[in-house]
Length: 120
Length: 99
Image 1: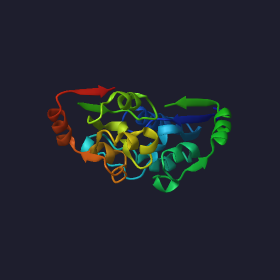
Image 2 (image 1 turned 120 degrees about the vertical axis):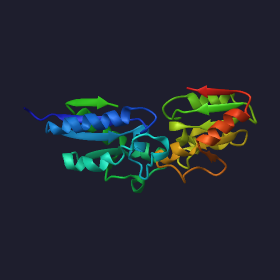
Image 3 (image 1 turned 180 degrees about the vertical axis):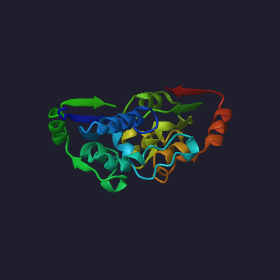
Image 4 (image 1 turned 60 degrees about the vertical axis):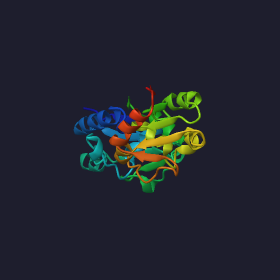
């Protein structure tokens, strides 16, 4: 089977909707098929990667730790759009995983070169 | 009156509509994804920093914690727990949820 380039576009904050968690689940499934997987974080999606998430008081599952486990599934390409991060007053130091910070223009190029783009 | 907003100000216009229609002296409780609007990184663009001159603003502490945002609340916004949420609802004669 030919390897395809899959991009997961994450644009929602982590707990207000189910999108962030659903995205992670599909990412893990895709990774088991040995595909070329990239995750990108735009707009409120940047909030998914913020350090120090503690959901105990809400009774919701804290899925933020899963981002740190992606490495183990050979999912190593996590991109954050610089403009989205800056608009939220965040820096790389606020994030819980190592990411590649890129500009909107670079993000556009990256998106255009994918075989499959999945939006969350 | 108590206004309640639970959506991110960068994803929907719920907060914007609320701030347009809330009368001076009203209370505003931010829950779920709306809590970002009262953080140091979001309060200027969300309009909350301005709105605080006229409204009493609260944010739900468990939702701040879940998002790694506790301690990032701007000064003047009061963090409340679920018990405080109930108090706010009972203290105000009516409320509007901006879904």
